[in-house]
Image: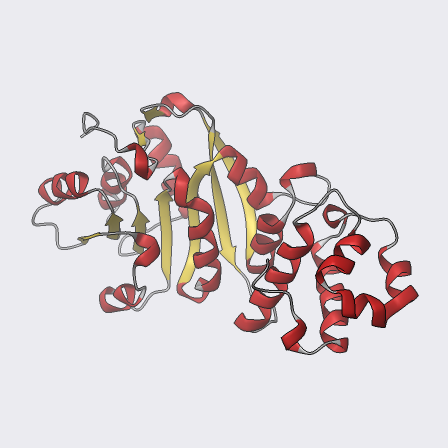
Length: 277
């Protein structure tokens, strides 16, 4: 199947090294009978490794040519199911129809959907035991970054820390794929955690952070004046003294949470910056 023509519009880079697939499975900790959701199985190397270990696989593939090849390869396998379509448009109730879960997600994600798909996984994390994802190296850095990691630290890192225990496991070079991408990839392992917030509160927090990171080189106080002018006027010098000359990337996750709690205490939900962010 590695001879299958690549559809560039879907960001396809097929894993071709079985040893990498085995290491991904080791990271995921899959066992016989584990329900696994595989996104973008492509040429099926990771799928075959999962099935070899007795894992039950529900795969989603957008490319109809690859879908046909996968159906032929795994014909008669009752523990393999393929859904053809766009994973971003898929109702996740289809998972419940096959297994009550919780599921493990094991995937070599297409580069062009990794970030929007992550945010969907975050919102639906009650469904997952864990996520073991191969993504572009830059995305892996951004998912696992902390305040001392410069430009890599931002909304994606704060969102990931909000909902997961994060680990960047190993780097994967371009020559592990066909065709080789222009950049390195990496495998990240995510374990869901509770944030203590409702889903609506999480979304408001992330929208708020996103707004304040739009001009990340400006001070946080200036960004607050742009996004939340009423609050800045109300909080006054106490807020200025709290944030001083710090920039958005200088705050830890705990500090963001505390600042947001202060904002929520003072302001009505209708004043939250959302649509413009």
